[in-house]
Structure formats: C-alpha cells, structure tokens
Length: 170
Image (spheres, one colour):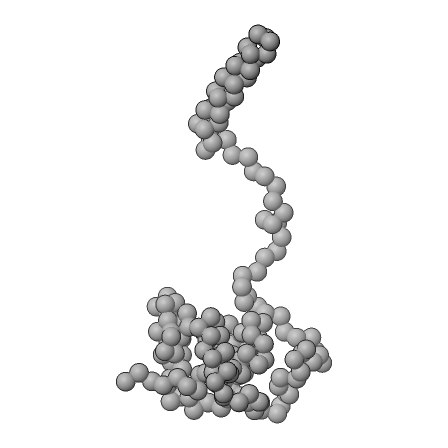
C-alpha cells in the first residue's frame, strides 16, 4: 500500500513537471500534422462557376433559349414575391449594392476598379426584366459574380420583381 502511494506521488510530480515543460515548449516545437485538406485543389466561393453541359436542360426547365433574346418575367410581382425578393436581395446583393440599391453597400468602398451599379438609376430601371434576370444569372465579367448557382430561377425572378420597387433617394 505504501509503495502505491509513493508511485502515485512520483507519477503526479512527473506529470506536473511534464505539463509545465510543455507549456514553455508550446511555441518552440511545432509538429506539422498531415492534413489532406491542404493538398486538395480548392476554389474560392463563386470562382469560375461551371457552365451547364451542352444541350442539357436545367432541372427547373429551360431558362433562356439561345438566340431568342431576354426571357419574359413569368412571376407576378405580388406581396409574396416582393418579400422573397427583398430577403434574397438582403442576403446576396445588399453587401455591394446597399440596402437602398444605390451601390453604397459596406463592400463598395473596397471595390476600386468598378463600383457597384446604382440599381435605382434610370439606366438600371430602364432595362427589361429579362435583361436584369440575365445579369443576375450570368453576372458581369470582372465586376459581379454569377448568382445562377446561389439562386434558383424563381428566386432570381423574385429579386427582379424586388428591384423594380427600388426608388432613387431624394
């Protein structure tokens, strides 16, 4: 019994000393653990979205038929559509375009080459619904990411309906 007590105190003392030693060596000895995440190819969000395969039809149906121009808006601008569009705009667009759509979002000052578009301007509001839909779907090269992977077709039409409600600041 006495031997067990002595061994207990010896191991406890050694454990405490080892713990103190580890605290001082924490920043000195770095063990590089193998992490397979580091050696995989990775992509930033919205970096080079993949185009759909040729002659394929999206699950939601054909969005645009090539050579037929901008599509017509199939979604009525009712209260439900506007509410969904406002929520989706706040999640996906507001950071650049701002809550009022004037291009004054919190990210806008950091965009040096191209400032976000003023969605309340006469130029933006004069575009057709289909043109706005295609801009949201495909983005603008070097300026705005394509949101076709983030938003479904009906959600993009809801955002278009919401954009029609934006008015310029007075």
